[in-house]
Length: 267
View 1: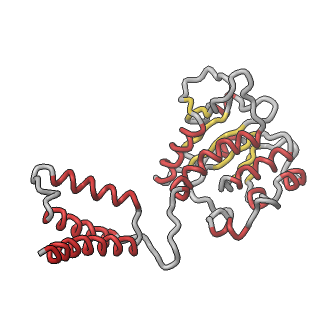
View 2: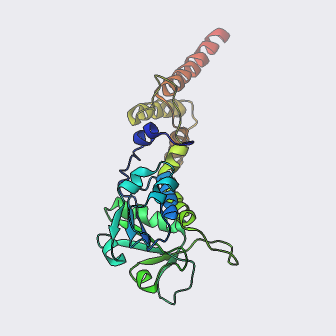
View 3: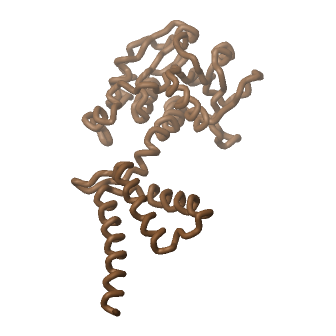
């Protein structure tokens, strides 16, 4: 299947064990195809905890397997429940995905905000889940009442209806991307080069600051602490490798010794 690499999935930790990821609860889903496409959307986003509440056409469902396009690990681990209350019993934070007004006093959050809240909750060991209703009518008010907040995507108010897989993907993507934001900005280090340790950076900072004091750049006792912090912050943002730190320290030595040689040659 295009875009599918089971080896990379295992290396990334998404071989069915997405620790802390929210559960996806499909309440009374009608078509097996929609369950399969929702499972596919889940695995795209590293979600594997699928819970089915009274699916109309029963479970397991051959149509779901065909529509999952390889996301069989999600379907194989799917759990069947008779009621929504049973499906969310072990969860501590639940969102109800719905685009309709419900007349309930509940917080309304975007998928992005919900993802942030669930990430924080997961870090504290709190299990979370998201409810999605039947394709035709959406969640029943009794199901929404079991949730802590309503999840609504800011879409065109004149046409905000999503199919089941779209809704799962939209929410799952917001969860997933929070976990890869750091990866997107990672530096690729050449073979044999590694990020400098804090000890190496500290020695470099001290070396630089000694020479800046000696040459008079850090002559002001009052301003020196803030100037030193600014310099250190600048170099910290660069994410120096160990080799780059050695190069910079060599450059400092070259500047200092070169200045002395120029004086000698003039003398």
